[in-house]
Image (cartoon, rainbow, N blue to C red; front, top):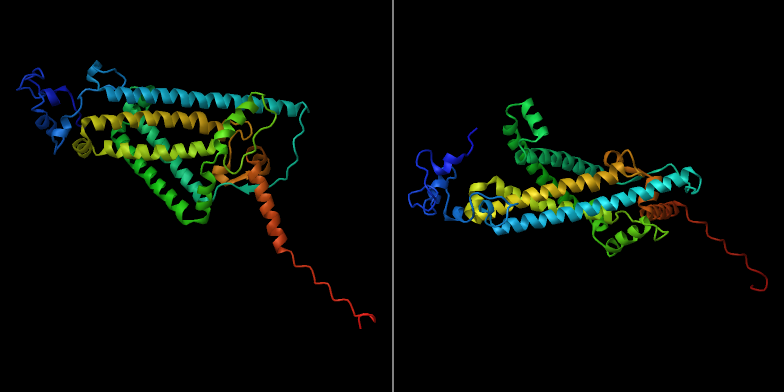
Length: 361
């Protein structure tokens, strides 16, 4: 495998200062120098710094201020979002554990529920979720392998196979294509199936999705005795869903730019390429931490579903789980079931007319 090194740009024996007109890295010679490895390189290749470090301030390491701004904003976003998620989940976990202890001590009596299962995810939705899980995990592993090649777990993978990085590149691209195709599949499902259209309607943000978090916070802090009753999807699932939509689009666009580097640098300049790479990395960090802190908690470590919510496998949730997590949806399903049962009942016989009396005759 051929990789770039210092001599690729600076030459081996005629290393000169970049201000020297005969230097290979002089601004007038960069198109030719870049073209050695990037066929079709044009003047836009030279718009931007060659050596960049998004975490460095302007002037440090030749960095561009825009890259530093983007990396700083993303760092702040990650700290605030993931920190907020962690705090939210700690409060939720504490409240639910205290409730379970109260039930064990007989201080709270659980409501009796039937042993029934309710459909939560259709077969297509489970297949889409499974495809998403596999492609996302492969993207995370193979992506961070490139960013942190000396990490202990990457070294372990490299020790297993000397061609690990060759496979890494291929697997990352294939997984990216699968993720985007899964997105197209999901959009078609939303548009062309009744179940998909219903799913989209229920996932669309509502006013309560902006007020429920505050109500839950009050409940978890003991400032309110009433926990908000959620419909089919709460703000928890909706926030995750729309973050996934946004993240998939952003990662898909920046991923294509990084994949076709010659074309993208010719169109968007070297600075545009570096900006895409910075966004791609930090969005990957944000998405990975969000899945670990937010999604894993609610489907695995949440005391109401531990050790795992089986809906992603079976497609169904128990009545107990529905009562705890989605009571309004449970009530809707029961009401719908009652209406359907009522519609199946035979119509009552008509009352026969009374026989005429003498007075009426």
